[in-house]
Length: 133
Image 1 (cartoon, rainbow, N blue to C red):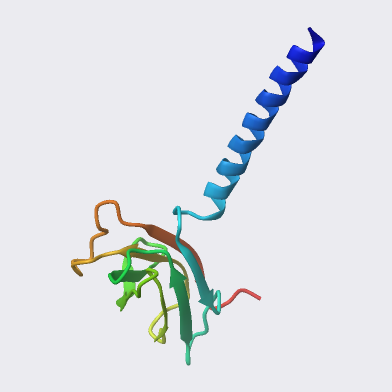
Image 2: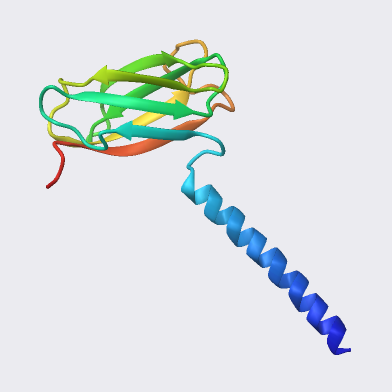
């Protein structure tokens, strides 16, 4: 009888650990397959170039990006075309951003209508201007 109890406990433990692993994976990436790197991770008040390396959106599509200020207003935006892996490596010059804590938002927008596509992916970052410290 102990062998059966051990087997049941082991199975339960394995299922629990898989659940924890999947839960943690989801919290690392806000969307299932999007990976993004923004350099620098905060901004200057002038001569401000932001390099964006993104992958995992819809292939050969368009990704809309925007800076939303702390009052919920969009201050700066643009589009980049994605390649065959749903990515791009490009930059923008963001000299017009005022001091604030922004949300930098990316999402699939195939038809360039400033609205996230149905079933499109999205990822958001916090972006401070100027850098703190």
